Every structure is written in C-alpha cells, then in structure tokens.
Length: 134
Image (cartoon, rainbow, N blue to C red):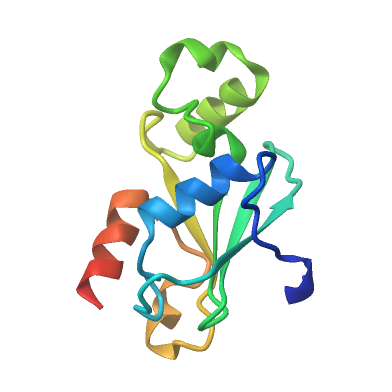
C-alpha cells in the first residue's frame, strides 16, 4: 500500500468522502494535529468498498465503508441497495449497530502512543472523542 496512491479529492467525484473526513475529523485522532491534510484512496473488499484516509502529518490511516460514508447507515430506505444490505449484514454478523458509522484504524502512523488502536474498528463518536482528548 503505497503512500503515493493517496490524494486529495476536492473535485466532485471524491467530494463526499473528502467532506466526511474533513468535517468529522478537523483533528487527527492519532497525532492530534489540527486541520490534518487528509488524503483518500479506495480499497476493494469482500463486503464492499472502503475508503482509506491518510493523515499527512503522522501517516495514520483510518477507513470507513463506502456504504457508511454515503449515509446508508443513517438512511433505512437505502438498505435496499446492495451495498447498504451487505453493510448491514456485515455489521449484524460482527455484533455492530446497523445505524452507527464505524471507522477502522488501519495504521496508527508514527504516533506510537496510539499503537493500542492498530487494526481496531470503533464507532465514529469514539474516534472523535479520542481526537478531542489529544
């Protein structure tokens, strides 16, 4: 997974995930930097696509499912879409709440104090609270 694959998506195509990360994480939950320059990259997975978010300061990588990013979790009607359905089934199977957006810490980056979060998936609110505590 090369760092050079990540890019800013300020244009129309990547604007939903870019706005999502910029507005929900004005502070990196791993290194605490204000206004991290988040870059994105898509990744294909069995249960659907994920978008990866890279903090340019510490190299931390967070991810969320495309279904969560597009608001499928908060919009019950769209569970009828295939991505929404897979997302809901995947969440139910792993004991997660279908109406909650989950973020995964793919890489903790160089902020080694956060090593405990490596590979963890948690509700977005928990990650936001972590960012606020830094």
